[in-house]
Image 1 (cartoon, rainbow, N blue to C red):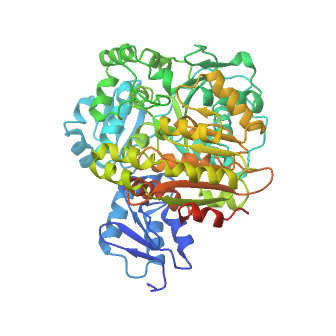
Image 2 (cartoon, rainbow, N blue to C red; image 1 turned 120 degrees about the horizontal axis):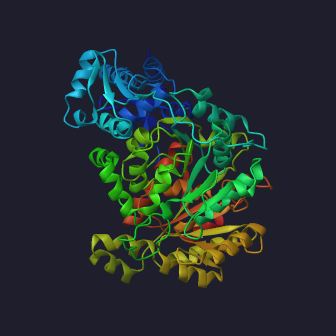
Image 3 (cartoon, one colour; image 1 turned 90 degrees about the horizontal axis):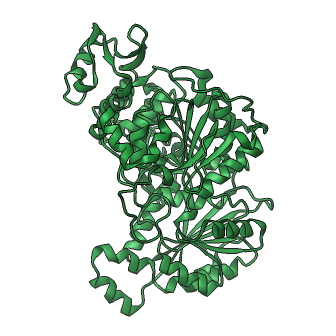
Length: 593
């Protein structure tokens, strides 16, 4: 039965419109987050899309097609189109109809299905056939151990998500890996959703929690549950050393059991923390110009054919010649690999992961959004989303700080407007985002928040240098020496520094618990995940109990404004609204409670 006061309009193309003025809007937003993806977030109506991947993730999480249908029908203004309900049942019913299991007779694997016709159909596909061995009986095909990842990826591209129940190698035992801190309720739930008492169908996948929710502690609890030697991969050396500090502080492990594998050190110990940077270092590749920290020079995610090739021994040798440190993945002692900020997973690491599907895998992230649209690759090779908790729920219980988001719009100078109009499309964003008018807004905001801990964050190093000079504040970019970075971050943590200007090196996994104001002047185009990560820098709960302020300064009527609208989509899905103010005059009206 429908109700015109309900908030949803479900359309036959699988888009769902959410009216924010409805008293049930928050309820509907939380429900849609379980099986839909936000596409557009203008002021009054948000548009979601139901996709095969979003439905597969819902199915893995235990949601039934009937629950999805009931949710849509119960929140819709008008009758849900029958075709939508049919598609929901079809897609959610696809998960698990093909299964990967161990074949104890051969010592390998088998692709099995109770539907012989389906098994024969996929086996005849030209992408699948090379990955299958002999037909063992009516409903089983042999699969080589090394083709486990490639087969899952190829079947996923055909629209058949495989239930991987083939189990894992245990790796070397990790003695005395006990957690010495108490988990919060949602943290224990996250670990349980991933571990599932060690069941063969679990032990892989992604846990999605906001920054500040304690993903590191969850990773350590997963390591303790697995009880085996563990490889942890972090975004950069600062993040890696934070992991090491947390391991030594919150587990019973001792320094001789924990190693750092980075550009500075090559230690391999029972628990080894490496960086994406060192694993993707190549002697035959030059860095791009500019702020070259993190993953700027890493190629795109490989497709199924590339992954299949990487599973072959000869191709794997070639891969290791290009990326010599990827051999770290192949060591037999690992029983668990933890991927921090898994949404950033670079292509060489994907390729290595395709070959190590017999090792338990845990991905941690604040958002599964990938700007390259490759979320399905994470599903296929790391595993499905096992746990996701709304940001506002954690805010309600005080586990993350409440945040106020404000977009401040400025205009271009008249002479700059003509330069912008005449510029090549690829140059327009830099021109718009770097307008000098933003500097005065930043100065006023810093004055407004003189008693707070302020991060000024941007993309373009030249712009950040000018701002650092104008504010008389230290600057950290990809070119800043690691010792200098660490010293400046430490000074900011202790309160010796109250303002810090940072490039994208601060986007990920930097623990600055008392930072409570972020001012964003430019970013990686329309990146939704970057927006979420930057807000996350200020969302650790504060000792004062106060709220956080996130400002994004946008150049009006330019691509900067267009990109800002796209960047805000993920946070809109989480229930964060941006207040829009006009220029400097709007600053004094912002709420600084």
